[in-house]
Image (cartoon, rainbow, N blue to C red; front, side, top):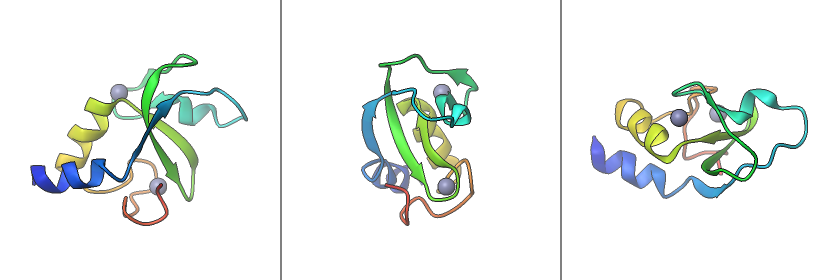
Length: 82
Ligand SMILES: [Zn+2]
Ligand SMILES: [Zn+2]
């Protein structure tokens, strides 16, 4: 399902990591469990249940190839995740 993963990727914003607020959970890519540094390039998924989460582009792409869902809440990436 690689083309579906690529389509979902276009719905996820590119950005830079800003460590603000107290959502420290969101500063770790939960696919590879590596913590981001301030200013790192990342894919940003605004989870409607868990808040802002950062992912490495390659990590979230691999994840979406396996499952087309939000890694945090298992929700639909299309809905409320922008
Ligand atoms: Zn990662
Ligand atoms: Zn979510």
